[in-house]
Image (cartoon, one colour):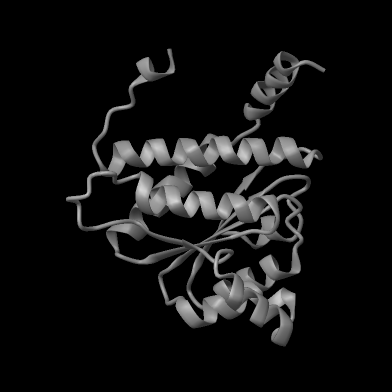
Length: 196
């Protein structure tokens, strides 16, 4: 398979993305920003890297003007390695995200949970904690959505059984979200000429 063939498949599978769910995620992030609440992002493996990238893009990439004081408060719970390893060692790996949420989160905050399978025990425990503590959950999944899909307040589900393609589509969605938030919050216009 050549790269052009792969690109065609990626484009076709992008049509599976539900526009309404993506816009709901964007509006939720905007609401959390306006209410000065915190966004937490979690994931394992490639989804952990996506969580870190999305947190950086939300907190720095949306509002690039350094004179703007109010920022989107987004943090990835995958990034504090000493804390994660201490929690995994003492409390079990399945508790690494729920334990951090117990420490750092509050009512009205927001969780973005990224899981290709939707079945990672540490993701599910974190989501269950959120459901009990007034923290809205957006679940970003692939495959059949696993346990995460029905537990999520908002589900962005890519019904594919190939992890690399699922993760590629997740990345496209997240970059679209950032670009839309730039228009919504920073008032930037989307300039298609930069793609030429």
